[in-house]
Image (tube, rainbow, N blue to C red; front, side):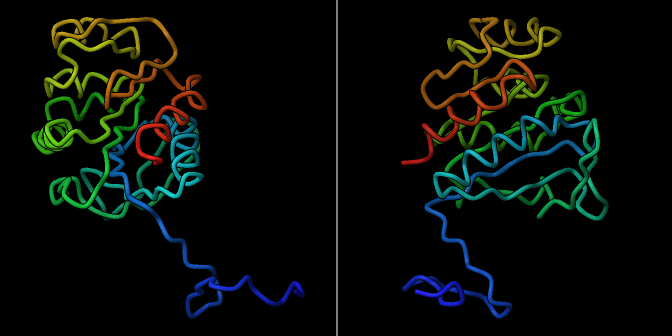
Length: 192
């Protein structure tokens, strides 16, 4: 087969690009500012590698969301309009900006919905405080940024200092350095 020919059965769009087919999709909640882009890259890449797509939402969708270092992008939709029905799980992006979502009713609702349905519930760094506030961590091993450890304990978590904790359908990461391990744990839960 020449380089110009495509493999049999490959679907292409109107521009000739291969259409990606996903087994499932994960909802990614991204703070509108100061999210941790390194770990987010690993997480999305690990999911993509097991044919799981991502759909990103934030508290605003008209302007670019901005990471702590350099990343900025347009999210796919609004957090307030999201529902867990079409998704196999939810991922809360960490970073200092995630603390703005700890009391967000929509973020807490989505975390509870995912958890009640037995779907993936994941967060790293500061975003683990969202899971604690939603009651998702009660009785589970979890890790997160040291500054949110009191909130995790108050939420009933058994706090650890490991890079990644995977307890049932809940995956938590300590910080940005946990990126690759965190991504692999996500893929293990939804990449069936």
